[in-house]
Length: 248
Ligand code: CAA
Image 1 (cartoon, rainbow, N blue to C red):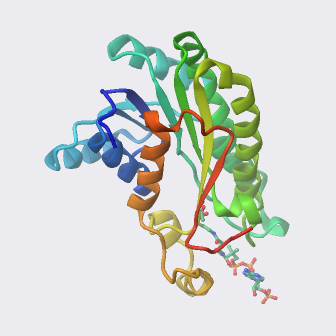
Image 2 (tube, rainbow, N blue to C red):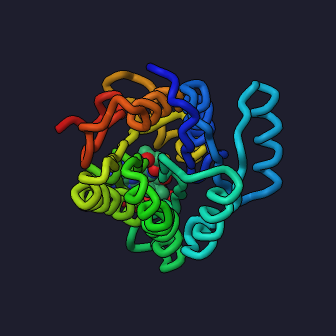
C-alpha cells in the first residue's frame, strides 16, 4: 500500500488491544496517528511503550460518552495538529449478563460507550470533512451485532445500531468524498475476550471454523485498508472478520 502522506487519523479507545494494533499499522502505513484515551496513567505508560517500539503517536484525552468532552478534544487536535481526515470509532466496553438480570446501569453504560460515542465523535468531525471534501469514518462493530450473543443484549443492540448509523451516514456524505464503513470483528485475542470465562470461551472458539481467535493485527490491517486512498468507492459496507464463525 502507498504511504498515506501523513493523513491525520484519530482512533478512539486507542490504548486497548485492538486500538493499539490499529495505531501501529496505521503509523506503519504513513498516517499521523492520534490516540484517544480516558485513563491518563495508563495512556502515558502506553505512549512510552509505543515510543520504545518507534511508534510516535500523539495522545488526546476525552470521554467519548460525553459530547462536549469530545468537542473539546477535536478543537484541541485541530488547533495543535490539523484537521482530522479519518476517524476510527473503536472505543467500547462490555457488561455481559442475561437481560433478566441486567441493570439499567449496565444497559446505559454499554449503549453510551459503544453507540452514543459514535454519534459524539462523528458529529464533531463530519462538517470539517464535508468542507474539505474528504473523509473516512470506520466504525468497529462486532459479529455479535450481526447475529446476537447470549448475555449481550446491551452490546449486541449497540453494535447492531452502528450498522444503521453507517448505512445512513454513508448515503448522506457520499457526494463529499467521505466514506463510512463498519468492520465486524469476531472473537479476537484481546483482554475483552479473555475476560469471558474460560469454559465459555473454549466453547465459543470451538465454533470458529478457522479454529482460533483472531489476531488484533488482522483487524488492524483491514482498518488500514479502509482508511487508505484505495477505497473511494467503498461506502456503507460492513466487513466481517470472524474466522467463518458467522457466514450469511
Ligand atoms: N446459550 C444458552 N444458554 C446459555 C448460554 C448460551 N450461550 N450461556 C449460558 N447459558 C445458560 C447456562 O447454561 C445456565 O443455564 P441454567 O441456569 O439453566 O443452568 C445459565 O445460562 C447461566 O446463566 P447465568 O445468568 O447464571 O450467568 P452466568 O454467570 O453463567 O454467565 C454469561 C452468563 C455472562 C452470559 C456468560 O455465559 C458469558 O460471559 N458468556 C459469554 C458472553 C460473550 O460471548 N461475551 C463476549 C465478550 S467479548 C466481545 O464482546 C467482543 C466481541 O465483539 C466478540
